[in-house]
Length: 386
Image (cartoon, rainbow, N blue to C red):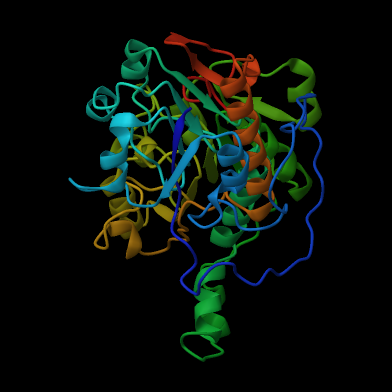
């Protein structure tokens, strides 16, 4: 029998279960390109309910315990005596989320001799030290495409929020109880007619480009793997040969590339300095793709007109993280890929992966990053543009 350790984010402050705004969510059976949505043998949850928190348990408890397995669920993942560290030595499977990552470091993997499977309930497994996972003979899997559209919608929302100066205007009528129209519109613009760029044209990047096309903007992108000519023509895209060319040519830049050595701190003082004065950056990919303090300096100096993001480092960030207080920001916690709609898909995908692994059946290739200690490649969104 296996022990599964799920590290999930804490319950709502007001208690679980919450009151839901809607009685149901749309059923999504497939994704652009033909990949089907997760297809577990069954689910023990109601789609549209809060599944990603501790009490939600990703809907896994009945399924696992009916088969005789042990499920431990916690949000306690940091510190010398965390529940994660105490439970790891005899754990077979760790389930985590990018929004509340269980950082599986070299040391933690070494301390878990039975650990054979790490599942990301969502997309993006850079919280797993992949070289150590390979050396340990582990499988690393994620629920590819489960929340890609969720993130793309969030990115478009944050672009509009920045350009239209939504946050300060909202603050005037709520926190300040005012009606200061001049103050609210003094930094507000239309997106129409702007140059908008996407760094990384994988699943999320392409979805952002398609959603921005109706706004009558000029669309640009950079990716090491250029899109097919018919896609470029359909969306009227301008391809750039490198990130610097892209960054210097646009008014708005949305980041959708994975974190790897070539993108670590890519947006430093130099690259941000090459951008047009008054540009905007939206980052729903990974925080370490930008230099934390360079962003603050650019906002203070006016080089950037705004920065919005959904990703931080570490997660959660400390209370004194400068992005909490920098000017002209529209930051959110890492929520873009954890809508209730997305949770239904990544919870189902997590169960599908567990069913396959526990039954000794192959996990579908698009979910695999590392398989039995070997880099799988097909679904490795931490290494390719996802």
